[in-house]
Image (cartoon, rainbow, N blue to C red; front, side, top):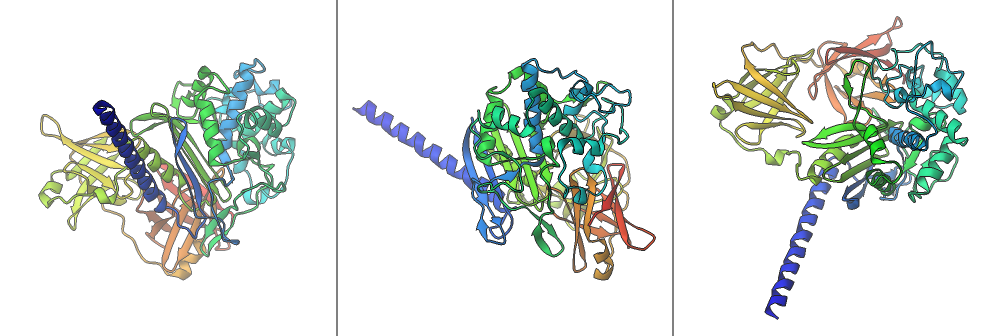
Length: 550
């Protein structure tokens, strides 16, 4: 009796401890989500799974602002580019059935496609190395997106555009390639892409809340998509669901996405050897490794191996992460491009594997002498020079760049410091010869050694009037399916890229601005009429022009 009683006490103690741990984890998840979404704004549904089962399932914000409808976990969203993993797996299923080879030239299935003497294969379409121009970068996408097109009309829209590079020579994210994969699926299966996905993936996996998108069909629990501009939230631009096709037209819910991820992890649809090709990146012709495989990108996250994909389309932001060894899956679906769902899913994933990103609550107090020991210049493996200095009792970091932007860094211990958002850290140390070393930690670690170098001057800002700033407000296309909304509030001006958070930019002069949250510079360009036509983004040594489309 005594032995049985002791066993019962032990079992109850274990159950109590496990329950407390689960409650603590849920509280941590809730704290992360609440920093990004409030109850009166467009929202999101979020799911965290461990060992194939949901441990956190959350809906926050509004599914419909006009009708004041709260989000529920069963809501259905456009997946946007997460669609690409379904398309890629469909191709791999057909390969396993012997109906195609990844080395097949695309002209085997689309004989009249103009390849200009190049050998473009299915492999090149899958990993964005075909060199074919992405149709979302041709013309004004907002106008193009309003017009229904058949699949062949869509292909005709881009097929005669000059190629960006020879197949396999470079990586450039490409929606045209996935539209062509959709066409190949139709040719091989002798059915529509929509029917093929429905009958070979959705139905077998019991994904009953997943669809090929339609603006006419009544879809239960479908959310309304929103965008944000200088006046607040607005309905998203109209998008004909014929346009994204196999690159972005599927819709789903977080529960169905867990069924999908479990099918991948359990090799329900394809063999493990086929999945390996999709999730482990690929190589260019010169042997350079790229993170993108087939519809998924490999990732190293907090020391863990995994794969992920995000999506962004008018009024939608999505992101999914799977960490292999921990068997942790996080999926976030949002009905607005006005918040960074990717940040949310990353922080949830880090917490789920017991490696949470630090927050300002973890910051400790250090003396000025303790801070001074790390002041100096450090040269890193990637060639970056970063300066650590003290100003007004605060330790700061500045990377030499186009902007020389200064960031506050906060102590977590005597030798470990974080940037305010907590996803980037420094870890300082001294080598055996007394030289200082700094490890810059993001998804990977970048080692920097102490060098003798004077610090350049930090960027100075000026204040501009609202009358000047308001001319820069609008929507700019930075790349395929990737936009920047510029908004003005009084004498402040903000930028917000698709699927990311809003950040302030500061005037260097009347047309040139810089950010403090990241090292970038923006120069607004005016046409002959004096109206703003575009801006030039200077970041990481590259220059990119973003055309104003609204």
